[in-house]
View 1 (cartoon, rainbow, N blue to C red):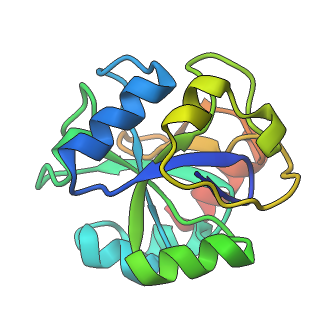
View 2: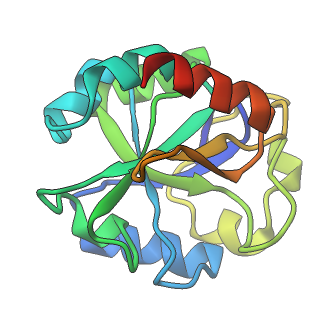
Length: 180
């Protein structure tokens, strides 16, 4: 578990099917729902998925966004749930401890550290027992804002807000339209 700029994240090695499966199990998340690739920097993200649109990434990241982008090479298939032609990516503005961890590993697979459909994890006290018991390591980042990232789908002709979060929908769409 790592703190981000929004909520605590349940994270693992994106190249490990076991780790990805454990995240789905601990969170009690349906297998068809995707996870995100969370990277330390835009550069680290592009090393893993080089075909991502650089201008869009640089305009929005780092920040409190999860971007759903085309994934024509179908990279990181075990993270994409039932949508292998897309990939969710995130480069948060990281607190110190998380920045150190991600600087060493480059990227993790991540989702919020709550039970599927449950309240967000703002502090370690909010962490569900089921997740705490299965977490290999927990990094304490103190109290976090508690509002998840805003999820933007940039795979179609028009951007769509899939989840309004830390950035209001209208503001997020305005920002995206400035770069597309």
